[in-house]
Length: 157
Image (cartoon, rainbow, N blue to C red):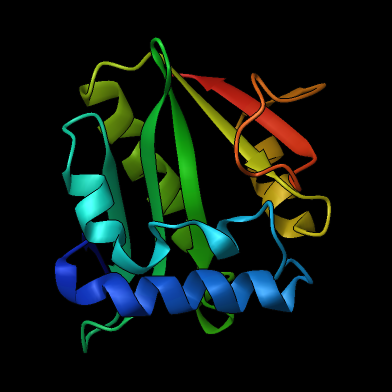
């Protein structure tokens, strides 16, 4: 398996991954990434600005198994976004590897902190963030489009 920057050809696979994972967690609803307007063209969203980045984990056939990115949030804080792993690829460190790539990319882009939002239905994600040194917050840093999210974390880079 290889981690590489997202390419335009990955748009459909990443959108499908995000929607499939959210639907499986009971989160096919407004206020989640499921309905993000840029979801079907993430490549252009993440390449439109040097303060953004998105990486995918692919198999030997270059099929997307997982993805994660970051984009500007506020001041020197970026938001870790759309960390999703295909169920068949879970349990092998993919999420940790992608998070490390995003942390490195965000730091190189000049950010000093990462913020993220998740949901209590995503128990494995909450455990992942806790184990990776993220600090839980009592609420969002500010209200954004993902109003269904109810768990918030921050990490210094």
